[in-house]
Image (tube, rainbow, N blue to C red; front, side):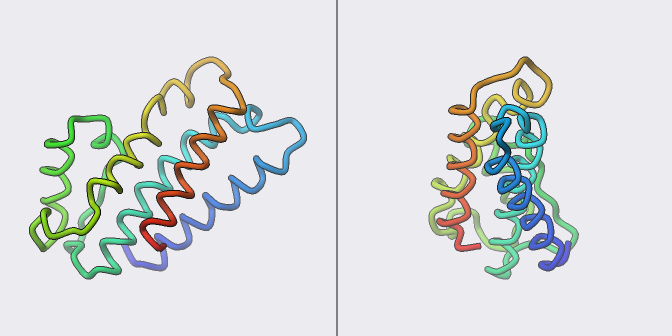
Length: 136
């Protein structure tokens, strides 16, 4: 995927976050959309980071489901998507940990019962932290 497409997707995620934060009905009214968009955004932030580092293989694509696995499995999957040794990607542990936290309970948030604004705000905060550390 082109860098511009990742940037467009990330902007859509930011727009949804902004809309949710401004909604007088609260974040829970956006729970399902936030669950999906934060997951999509996290995946695209890491892909964009890999592209900016010029290490993403052509045609490679990350999958949000990988981040529900054990760390070793995640790193194995990621290593197949980049052109450099996985150990050479600076701060990858930190990036993966943040994405795993975003993905944690994603399906319950997307398909389950309503949660709280506090939990959703924590997910939003994790997304912004990831965006900051990836400098995207």
